[in-house]
Length: 176
Image (cartoon, rainbow, N blue to C red; front, side):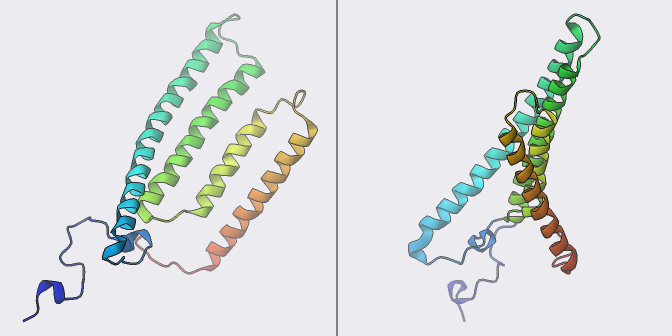
């Protein structure tokens, strides 16, 4: 009769929803590598804390966007917003949207334990688009504006390449 320790690990003796080191993309360590297991668990916990902090940041961002609107429409001339006021409010809205995208990155990492490059590129494009929307062309240096355009071009090409590659690959797992 074989003992439990002699049997290969088939996952039958694990708690439901428990994470194994293999779930983090690492090979099962030897007994001397338990330190790595602890470090991976600390990283996973840290990502969960980041998700909570990002949720708080999103809520504060929404409150700030509302406050910005209130301040701008309650200052003279009351009820009227200038183009600069509108751009400031757009900046607050886009900052919240970027925070939501970052939160999506964090939650997808927690769920899949991989970095989704397409989502990261989309988040970066949204962040740089926010910057472009609130550009003050009368004050910004032309070299800064040109370099921003180069960054947008690079991110766009990267996003397009990833999208094209993903559209040509068959679905690996229909459950994800």
